Image (cartoon, rainbow over the protein chains, first blue to last red):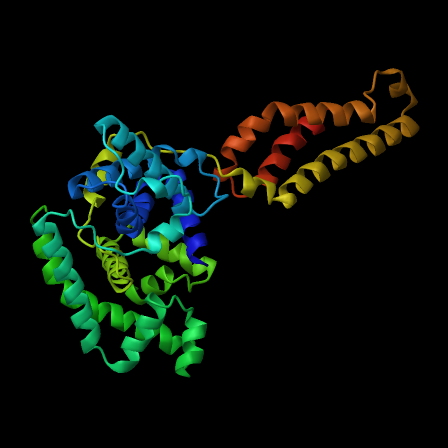
Length: 199
Length: 165
């Protein structure tokens, strides 16, 4: 089952009334959507509000989602429209107005420049998470580090990774899982701290 | 189970295993937390600069006030179910054929019945189709909860056709 098919399955579950399935889509796409919206909206609190509003609108519009496009592409359009409405109502101009009409979410979303308008606290938390993940990756045994890097950064399938690392697919599956768990274990104390305070 | 979740995220499970994993994921808070953590790790490794954003709780609270979405399955899927349509057409055709032979047999063995008004085979099929059209919207809206929509449609059409005999 491909990533798109997985999203479609979650959407269909949400369409049948399982709100928890929609929660999983929120978990998966909230940062990606926020990063996209940060191209248009200056303030980090506003970005978070618009992200939230876009997800609520997407939930309301679920009956009209036919699966003709990928879920994220559809969510992207809702996010852009929500940002437009927000900026119009606030009487503000988008940060990057030239890209506003561009519906190619992927190309916009690939840019990873850090917006310079976040609160110091939010920026600090962001850096802490990033540092913790990078440090945890550095400490991984080489075979785990290679497997997770090929998967997450290069987007290779298990079969391709197995071929590149000359090992069975089952081993790739296990290495990627062990790498994720090792990183998550180091990240949890930080996330628990973050949960107790809003930035 | 977390290893299965990891494979699910990567799109590396069969449809059957993925469906099972999603079912478990929806009912297990630890797995949901792992789902969030693993996606966060992926975003961090891909250089996402907004790792601190977390609107899950706010969205979840906002959705509590929303009516539960109950949407019929999408049109693309309906179109990809030729078996269901074939089952419906076959059911209607079978009702017509059985009716036709039944009528002929009756005609040959019991001449007294020939005087009675008997609907023509064409009329039988037409009435069966009318039943189908009348129930079409109902069947479309509820096909998701049937074991097999082809079976459900056939079973709803057949009694109507049988009643004509």
